[in-house]
Length: 603
Image 1 (tube, one colour):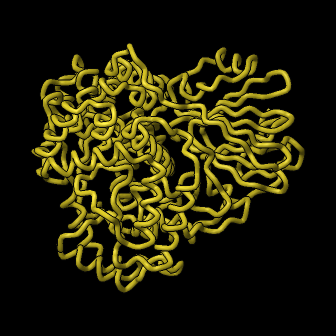
Image 2 (image 1 turned 45 degrees about the vertical axis):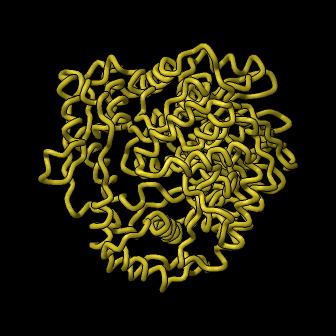
Image 3 (image 1 turned 180 degrees about the vertical axis):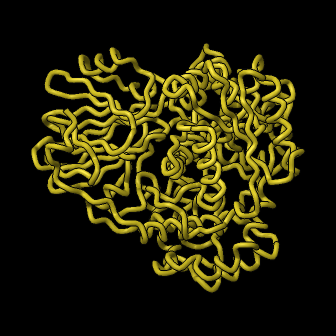
């Protein structure tokens, strides 16, 4: 639930219905998101979100100028807000794992952890351009950087210090996080330290927490760390299809539980055909933006309700985000070429080509081209590609600043124009992280997209009475990984070697030797077939009303996908996700803002 405030402390400021105002402050709190404060000379400090700082360290923040690294100094997912006479200063975390938003309101600025609440305050509409980018270009977060799904509501840049003046003048942002490579410290030891601290923080807040245990590297590592951080056995949960008890993922989960008998209490949750993807999309609860788990919300909410009611879970850990921070993107080859590591570039390209069953030549050709191409030039080329629908040369090796964009046939001219405008704006904006290695810069965009959207899944969990945490997306963890020098980064084709090395003494040998993970693709196709009648009746109506999709063509594509015709499901699933979210927004009551009363003030 959200926390927010204003850039002025004048009386009579509104707050959301049900929220509690903090005395002598414009800040308010709705729900259980932790907020700690400290009073200094002429200013007040708020630490918003779970943070590993001690109470004394929070008090110290008010006694001295806030340092640029404050939001990744301690484990946790938090922001630091300075409230003063001349305005409010907001320090955001570098991963964007606790996104903060702002909107102009009656000559001042309102800030909040929820864009939807600010949208209600500012009488915002749904942003058609942002929706077009979400549906047609989900792998290009650069097109919508800083933009939310509500007009006039903006996300404050992650890893920055933003001054919100009390008189509503334009705010100023200063980038405070720039992941310069850190020499000397071994990458796997930095990862181990950061991830261990991130899990321990959650265990200290709620020793009776639970964790996913899917059998993969990421959830297994988190579960083991949580088990080692608590006195009572950790409740670890593995979901599986009903009647199938010998799957590979389940086998690996059992191996881990057997290795930690007495420390891990293993629970199996069978799921039936009632929990297939695409089921009951008109029943998705309202969230700040389309949730990654929208299409599987029935499965997720069944798991969460079951854990809450059966296990008494209040806090749950996942391994989400691990793939984003632990795998190298193909742009890594371009870094090797640019730094004249030709022998290593050739060896890694060959290993990647073998793994992907693709020719090695295009990989090296595109790596060399990317090494010569600045990011801004790639954005300018993207504008041309979107405007004309063609590119000079297809990136067959998939090594580039941005992935190729096969715009679906059901995209309308209106939605294509939205993409072009977004790309032009992105190309015109200066890059606050220019100068980073290409692979690091690509990962920053990906991680921030994953971290921000994960908040919507956490909202779904909160509706089931559970706080959802993703330790891999902790800013301390993200910072530790992205500061790895080129020579310490894992090979492109390797399966999370730094994680294995970091936790080789705690991961069972069978897990350490694993090189693949389970897939749910077949589950998605069967779910699509089962839900097709409902989808053909309701899916796409909201997007079509904004002129973003050609509804007959879109539904024809749904039919083709349901019968198993080969086609990528990514844009179809993004469209269904966005449309389901729009349905929830249109049917849920908007947040109401009211004037505070003495009963709503926290003394």
